[in-house]
Length: 597
Image (cartoon, rainbow, N blue to C red; front, side, top):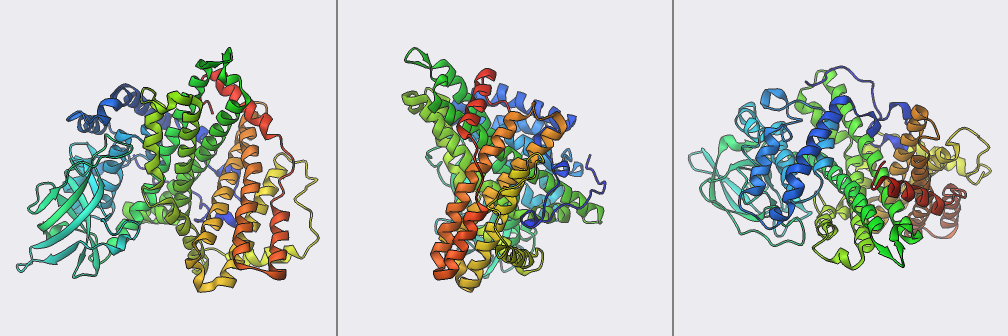
């Protein structure tokens, strides 16, 4: 059942940059309810028993296998888990959807599942008419019908609004006649329902529901891909394709609203799948390192291997912390909006839009974490990692698409800064006031990041507060100096985005470490504290470099020297033995035979 109980107001999207978060109020994976754990166990059982043994056969495109597994996932309630009950779903919360996405991971099955559950279903669920929802959603939630999403075209990849597919109203007013082409369409070869975007009268970007078998609608042959080989990826062709007028999805000329809103949560769910892969292949690498012997000992005993394993665990744990922190904020915002009387549609879309910045940050970070994990996994496997006899080889190929899916990481980095600045200009965030306060602080006597406060985690708290000051200094100066030309300085935007991502992740890790320590004690959570402290320590260096790269690109003279001094002052993290911390983390995983955090 959906929980319509009013929840306390949560921080607005991007507000973490200028306000503190209370560790007791954030959500961490250790907060999963019994119902969450039941869904997780059911999903794991399905994945381990049905999907994993079939992955090779799926990648070899055994006829009907992928479709049959999608149907099974629908029959046990995974596809419709977060759909409202009135449309054949279970009405579970956003966290439940996150768990399902994480467990099913990013592989040929998980990508196909995600396309049906997400971009295949959500546009109709949240933008369709009641008649459209009643017609399509129950069969999609059950897995009987599979969905796909037709946005990308050969000449309009990241520039979605540059699409050339046209739609013209027929003379009798009963159909729109579509002409054009779409490419890289996941599930395109077997889907029953396609959400397709075209321009009416050459400029009104609009979405349409197109059913398989519609006159004038055909699909091309399967693409031969580097990874996720078993997923269906084809081109779609529309040649005087007759789509009934009642299949217009949403408002005419407002297709961009559908496209961009669906991408917000699509990025989040992709992040969950990448997180699941990171956990799995960290474990795979741990077990291989234990079993593999060189120089008469397990390679897991080598410091260089422990460094790799420890870093894989740290980045994965930080991603875990940031993902579920964000997921619960989305959940709570949706509940807040429902309590104010908003429909399920407006509540969901409003919550997703509110945290679009955080979803974009997660997409960049989690996709790069899984790439790091599988790359290091191949290295740990050595020559065997280059052989298809070992599963790390497939994981390496499958992971690469995650940095391209749901908007490339370059596009997302620029969106992060753009969305944040727009929220500031609209008054949704008091970025100007926060920037002025930091500027005044620069005139005070510096304390070089040190603190006499013996409160637990005081140094880490101060580090993260200072990281936020660096962002405000650099972004504020960039806006003042470059003004309307800032959007053309993509390198600077990406520098700022990376400081934002590192800061949000570091704060998420700190909040989780504090909450765990408060709940279970310092001794029981010392390794989690190690992971947080190592990430914060390393983030300080990355933030220092990104901030300096940015200011060096637009400032000079006294202005540059002042900002460089401020960056140095606010990125001092103090001494911390990261080598020893990584070894402790790796030793625990070696003892437990896999990722155990």
